[in-house]
Image (cartoon, rainbow, N blue to C red; front, side):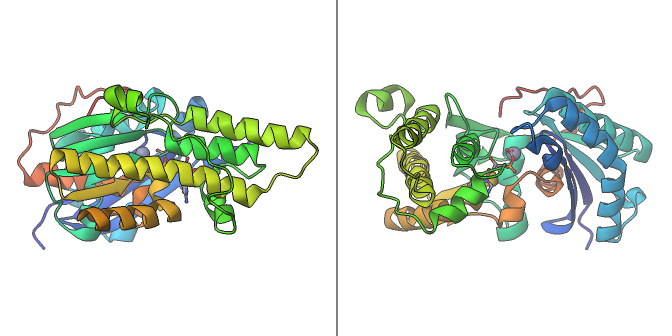
Length: 342
Ligand code: KG4
Ligand code: ZN
């Protein structure tokens, strides 16, 4: 087709992603992860992540081009995550994207990581319904956004005031003796557990909290409640029912996330909800969101798990939208901004 070929680079956390899209079609999605190098620290170590990006960048570019069957010289525009994320990690991607844009003589588009998590859905379900509400839940962020125009007008409705949802999954997994990153393991364990075994707290859902934090989240109290519960059991010399605790914890997280997302759609008169970020892979979150959206007459879009986690395809997808909507490219002075707002 004649649609422009857009290359996207993502390095905001531990994934080096290079994606290539043409129009709304995904041609390549090369990912290298430094997750294993961080596992023994129980979390992502920024210095380790930056070095890994540097090592993985050129091989990832080569793999993406091979997968797409294109040459770098065919690329019409280069998009890159300029924030938010780890400063040193972002720098590697931004520097690589600038070098490519200069070398190829093509426009550069610095994009927001959160908006890219929304835009990626175009690769699976076609043009975005705008406005839509987006629930983004990962290890680094948990926010509700009102998306008027994914290439520019995105309104943050609320976000976590402490831990991100994925972070809570990872910490609780650790408490339960499950490997890092724990989200998928909690999900798996929970399938055999009773979600009503323990009723854990639903953060920021009380009347008083709702007045100030209607669309905000809090998961650190929940994590502490699980820790106390497990400790008490151990002190009593009783075994910890891992599956039941996992299911009960997961139920509390998913209840709050879906409740607030549906409330945001209703309050803003929006009929479409999009869920993204690594935690969107959670089977209970998907099922509960489907149930509650269908009851509320809201259409739900959740990209396939591989597109939900950090990758270069999401950046390329947003770059393609920016090009299609005639947005002004970034200047070559583009800087990485670790706390870039949407
Ligand atoms: O988007 P992502 O790959 O990276 C960022 O954090 O930006 O998300 C990773 C997070 C981790 O916290 C991981 O435990 C969580 O997503 N996660 C899950 C599941 N799969 C991944 N959490 C719950 N259930 C899952 N099935
Ligand atoms: Zn992310």
